[in-house]
Length: 462
Ligand code: 5AD
Ligand code: SF4
Image 1 (spheres, helix red, strand yellow):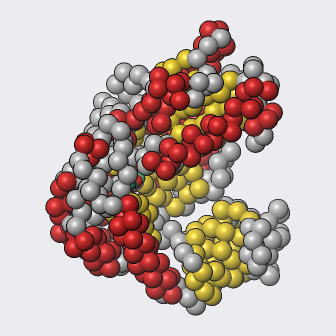
Image 2 (tube, rainbow, N blue to C red):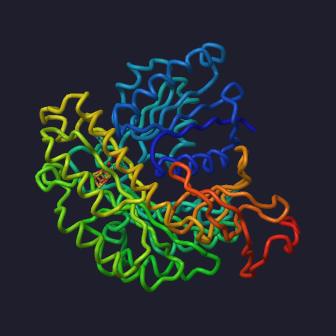
Image 3 (tube, rainbow, N blue to C red):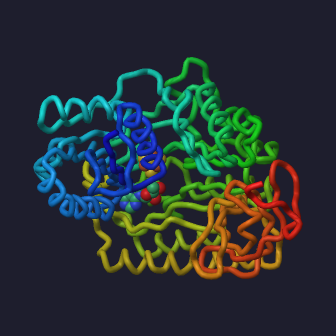
């Protein structure tokens, strides 16, 4: 078999796209390698959400040139959002590239690789798929899938929100939902292969069911359906948009036992004028009222968010509103960014008026605030027992395993390596908060519905 080296930048959608390419290329005779030098095909799945992401990719491209010189038969491709955004221009910037493929054409990867071979020259494919339906048929059949304990499942692609700062609507195209039956089939397959936690994935999962489906299935209904599949121990979803987050979803948190008590709900700013400039289509008050309702329905719910500081024309007091909102909601974690103008977005035409040094200071203040809140919120778990889904072993000194609790806190813990294995749910006594993670000690294992106290349990391998 030929060998393909795949590298992924950016979000979970890209990770899922890379997995999909691996599978499609496997069917056309390529096996994945971790060594670039052994590869017949190198694919870099790119991101263009912020300028930094783009720069990383161009510097990686520079380091690939010697491989191409040493092996002229090597096919080098760029896929994903930067490929879509730049198209032909990517060939001007990186003249030794053979393949440029946008995220909406991922399903044609094997065919595009064949075209490169036939043509013996570069192939660019950036047109959006014209199909009415969104289907990933190869993920519902008998495929060489090796999911970990936690598996992502695409339910919707694209985004129709058009926030003024964001490239995604341009790079990933219009929203289109995948049939609920196909999603259920993939979940069943993943569970049969060892997945315990399912994370429903999309740029805006709450818009699920609106386009690309003959029969409308609202997002909350999909939650009930997936949660009911035997073997799904935990259910999560990401990412949500506050405008589309419904009361029925809040009810689902109350009604579905295995829907975890965590919500990632990007807010971007705590100021109404900035939210309007960003075209987020909701106010700070609406956001807070959603959060308050959710907190009263699910008292121990953990919340996380995305924040942008230094948006064009953001004043000091408008920035302070963001800090105030963060304090008000008490996010357990935040992904915080300083605004970076992106090609083709409406905000690119606004004067990028906040100096870089001010953006950096504002970013630093949000990070400091978040660190303090995370530390304080983490302290509440100390001396408590938490249920941790074991994701894998750890080679870090003093830690045997890593995993997450339902509220999406990383938990590093010590435990008997003969008795615990990935996919187990382990009761851990939390001893301390270390950075953004909890640290503790395993006291019992829950395997196949049976609780085994550690010290008495049979070995993990049987
Ligand atoms: N500048 C800074 N951050 C951005 N994001 C998206 N576009 C930009 C941009 N131009 C952030 C938003 C979004 C997350 C995925 O990336 O916070 O929710
Ligand atoms: Fe980008 Fe806004 Fe769509 Fe999120 S909701 S992907 S920030 S346009």
